[in-house]
Length: 109
Image (cartoon, rainbow, N blue to C red; front, side, top):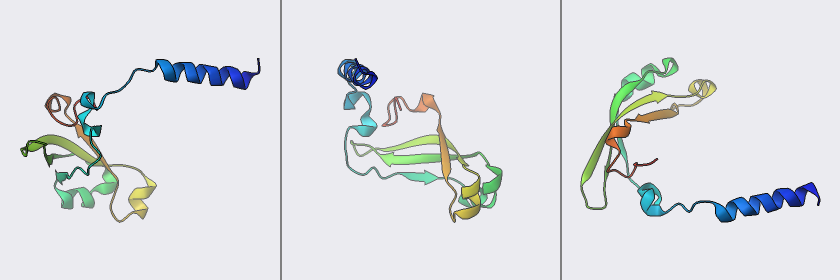
């Protein structure tokens, strides 16, 4: 049997037996609407020290399906090397505290 057919059969076998991911297990992807987020961080400090990759505390806020505002403490930093020199706004990295995510849209992410 040609090698390409063997790989194709293996791929089909794995896709048929792959566990199904349900939207309720990962609520962030349960809907296709836009999720409006607000990130609060000391922006002047972040931009001034961008090339030093500072880690700054902040908050990520959004309104859940019940209309309640959810606030999650985060750490935010700049990312990359060359993009920090070329981009007007640096790419950002966000670190979540896993303990705060249990009852939020980000649980399991």
